[in-house]
Image (cartoon, rainbow over all chains, first blue to last red; front, side, top):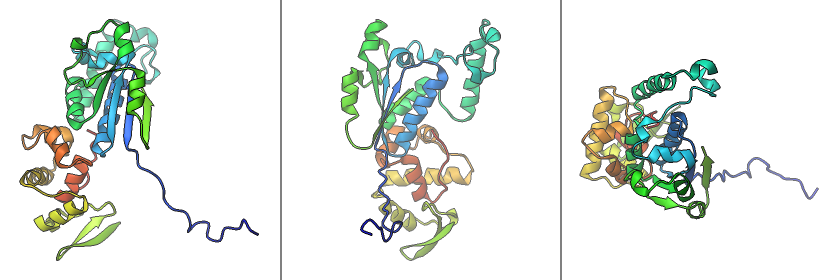
Length: 171
Length: 104
């Protein structure tokens, strides 16, 4: 009877470690993905958790000065929108759906993309652009927002993720 | 669940997360004691924020970090410097108002 545990419940200790850092990777430029990423990053800071965002591929549009206020929601190939694919492709459909969505978000006190980036930066969220994606899209750093913390390679980003209780999330 | 808690000479009622259930029970002394629990040394700037939050709560305006940043009382950056471990939730606890439900 050597393996008998006398107090199986009482011996259990709550050893759950809280999350210390959220490392988010944003690879898409549709407004729903961008907001999901921003809200997660901002929500982390509000709870005292560190957060960083790595903008790669189309995610770079969310930090490109001329494009960030013109992001759209996808009306084609997005079953969640409940718009038939044939209609979703009609001219003006995306603009209309996006306008509706932005109006609803403003009602909930969710800021536009540009202001949201300012809030993130002020809260201490680090904003990084992906070097490879910038080279691919022939983007210069001066086209990106002023609040950008820098341009990184994937290796640099992993280096920053070091430490206990870091979570990485791909959006 | 409501818990009774003593701060200095005052007995107040809190919820299980330590937020006061009745703002009328709040005094500056209670606020200072809760701040100590959160590891915060209160300064005039901290109290400016607390006064603003209580004022908004009495007017039943839902709070968010965005609104605090636009209030002119404190910038978002300063707000994070004053309450680094969670500006809105910790300041609300010190102010004796309910924990805000905002995600922004």
